[in-house]
Image (cartoon, rainbow, N blue to C red):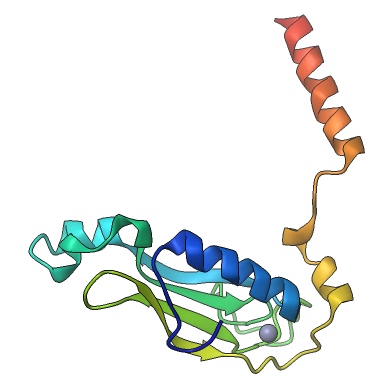
Length: 149
Ligand SMILES: [Zn+2]
């Protein structure tokens, strides 16, 4: 995955993004996005009317989970710190091409201002998987619900 790479569908991008995240031990969140549906509702005569619906997005911006740019809280307390927010500027910007046939990486910043490691990556909330124990609890809860009904 690099600058100017293009994808025929958002799905195609997602699968290489997944690999990218796993290989580089970084995770991202959607900072900003606009779907093709919403851009077309706004500009019914716009050139995106003919865009492939597989693209899903007109543009989508991902930021490193350690970026401090999300949830802009209007607070004067600059002392409050969080391990998740370290002001990292790394991110990826994906935009539909002018012909509406592909999504193109138009911006890509890979400079993380923090440690990047597998151990840290594995501990990110998004990486938590349902353990067999959790699954059993869910099934039990469903059983109880059925009995009550
Ligand atoms: Zn980062």
